[in-house]
Length: 240
Image (cartoon, rainbow, N blue to C red; front, side, top):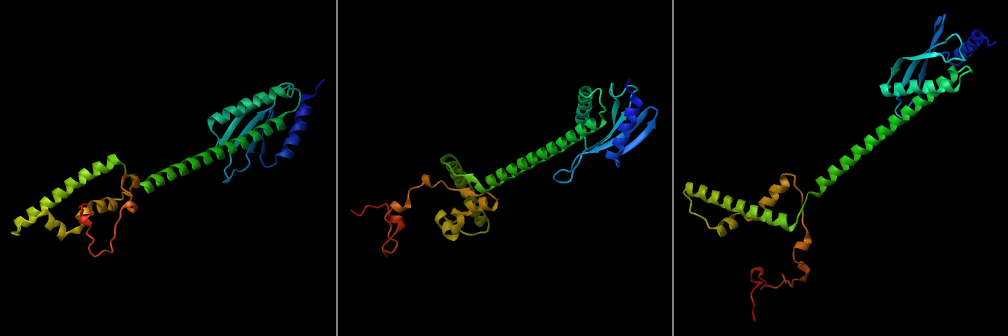
């Protein structure tokens, strides 16, 4: 005949020696005690922890002990539910044998797995943020790529703005009693009129990339700038 009380006393002594710092007896009749189980530390020192309460039933170990989670730290409720399920599975597999050490070991391994999963989630989040930062930096570095469509749109807008600028300047000078200037005179007074809008875009933080395939290859043009008679405005005339 199995001496359940003797088996329980022997196991209790063994458990106390194995877990001296985390084992606490709560009562002797029935025998009830807690064991605090802590995972190994993660990459940044993070841990998860749970305190399990076990209570011997009269015919333990032929019948499983009672258990519950007394407290938990950094442990999701879903993980706590999984631990309770794990305890039931291990108890069913070890009926007839003292099993507290086996149960606690299974929980310890599960807590270590949870820490590893936390590490993997943190690594995935870090990689996601790095990728987003790289994409944002790439977009900022590339700026706006010049295509035929957006170049023509920009050119039309630029010409309208230049015409408006010239009109305003003429109006201001007329109001000041100065003679009205022609477009050529305005250009001669301010050679930056043809580049002011580009400068405005750059000052606003918009980098501009030019698709060189949209323009004629300058190397194919026969330009002799050292010729004293060279006149870039007369390049289109036919001397023949």
